[in-house]
Image (cartoon, rainbow, N blue to C red; front, side, top):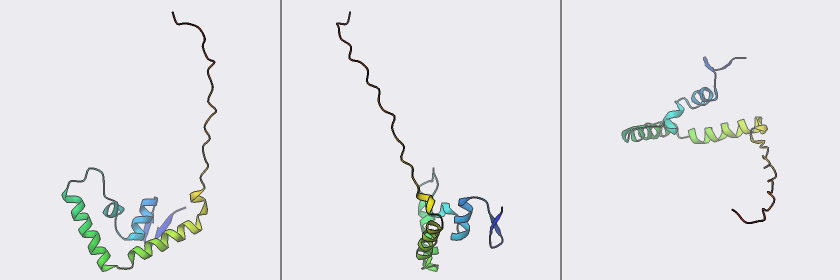
Length: 96
């Protein structure tokens, strides 16, 4: 099954987020190995986007809440049990 947002096909979760935001995710989260100048430029661009779209944070929170409401099993966590530790019998005697 193919999923489209507008005319764009969304293949991965990252695609859905990018299409919902209208910007690449890396703009907001950054990338490994950025130079010192890159985060500053990225943050400037993000500030400009937020200035042009003041409702964006509220829209994103609303979208996240809707996804959680529609997919309650996202947070179904099964605790992992630790196997019982075996006790070694105490050794008696003197080491040679």
